[in-house]
Image 1 (cartoon, rainbow, N blue to C red):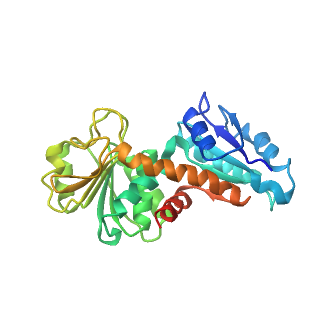
Image 2 (cartoon, rainbow, N blue to C red; image 1 turned 90 degrees about the vertical axis):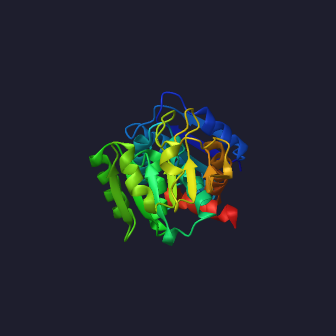
Image 3 (tube, helix red, strand yellow; image 1 turned 120 degrees about the horizontal axis):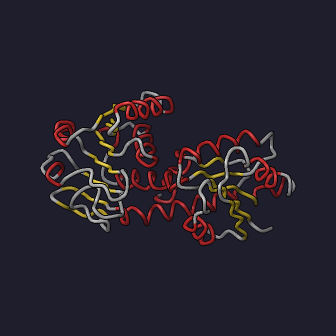
Length: 287
């Protein structure tokens, strides 16, 4: 029986990136829909649920994508509400690459750090990738400072993580200037920059002198670098005594996780692959 993946994309055009990855992951048939919303998604989900017998439902799966992660989260909730009993199919949510990228970044950091002894600074922490990276770090025992230009958004993000992760050690940082970074960074051993593309978040002078800093990860692939003097191609590259990763240096792992997650969808008909589940796929790939 053919493996069918149904792409539910919230954007104006269904992502060509996600389509290529799905095909490279071994999907037999790919059905792509754009401008999908919680209002119009139900019929698409019913089409996936009711066209194959119970023993064959694992051969149909849903992928939720699009450029807006909040829309993806809403779609995932509606999809889950539409399922009933054993009549369901597996679904993966990775809008804007939020989960696969965050997983790859945290896995890279974990090669060099004991998270239970790590204080991490996540720049762009209220964005889709930053929020999930902070969540993954907190679940693994790291102390996380979540930075944003908005105090309210930073606090809301920390509250959201605290609701998901028991005993999470997260605190917000309303970032107004680099002097604040100098103060908070003195004990920081990990910095992840997950801000908007093409925006420099951290000058070299703010991170290079830090004695406790061990790992620096910049997820911005568009010049200028989010963290100055970290190259987009860096992959465990030593710079000024720190281990550095750039967006492409992390991207190889992200792509492997993405493809492995697509393949895993077809192992059963009841999988929900979101932040933690996708991270665990990355862990398995490394073992």
